[in-house]
Length: 92
Image (cartoon, rainbow, N blue to C red; front, side):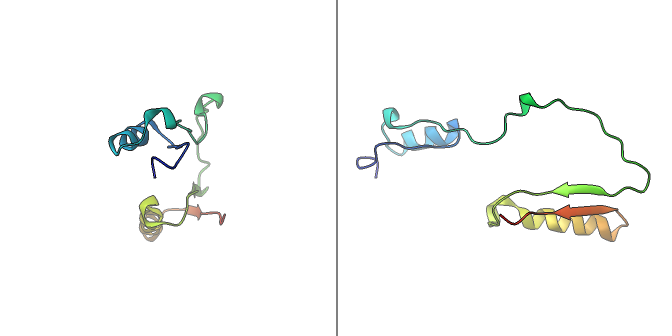
C-alpha cells in the first residue's frame, strides 16, 4: 500500500507517526487536520434559568469507538435521578 499510494492524509500528528513506523515514506504524508478552530469563538458564561433543561448534543458517526452508547447511558442515568436534560443526536 505504501509503495502504490501517492499521498496519505492522517488527521493528526500521532497518526502520521504511526504511518511512518509502519513503513510509509514521510514525504508522502500530509497531516490534514479536521475539526473546528475553537480560537475563532469567544466563550461566554451562561447560566441556566431555573427549571430550564440542560441541552446535550452528540455529533458523531454511530460506531462503537465514538462512545455514543456511553453518552446515552449517562443521560438516561441523570434523567432517572430527576435531571432535566434534553439529548440530541442528529442523523447525518
